Each structure stands twice: as structure tokens, then as C-alpha cells.
Length: 99
Image 1: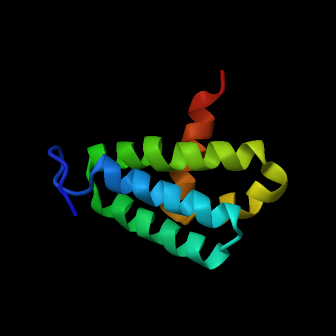
Image 2: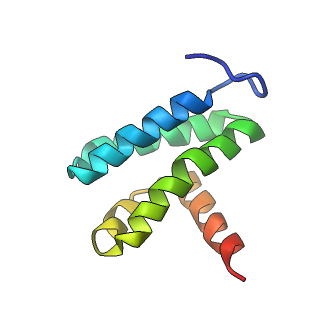
């Protein structure tokens, strides 16, 4: 993988690629693949510095959760699959968006 210049780990392109792959897996109902991709992103989140965490929050968690929330009847299943750290970041985003 290409290294980002700020914290030396993952690039925006890598995270966006995994986001697209995850969304496609969600849309065709590949739950096991979604779980594996969530775990991959969580590992990146845990290993990354603030820059990588911010990229994951903005380029993965936000777009995925936005789509799942708009389609909550079936999206809820995938929101509940977020591993612990991704779930905490997702909840942080929800709490910070309320007025």
C-alpha cells in the first residue's frame, strides 16, 4: 500500500476503495464479506494516527452509515455489525451532529 504523508499508514484512496467494496457487498447481501471488511478497516483505524482515523471517519464510516441510516429497515443489520471502535466513532458522529 501507498503510505500517506501524515502518519505513515493508509491513503485516502485505499480507504475509499474499501468503502466502495463494502457498499457493494452490503447491496448484494454479502454479510460475511462486510464483516471481514469492517474488521480490516477497524485494524487500520487501530493502527493509524489521527490523520488515518479522520480519513476512516470521513471516507468510510460517514458515507456507509449515511446510506444505512437512510435505508434503516435493512441497513440496521449492517450498522449493528460495526466492530467496537468503528461503532464508537459512529456514535461519536451521531452525537456531534445533534443540535
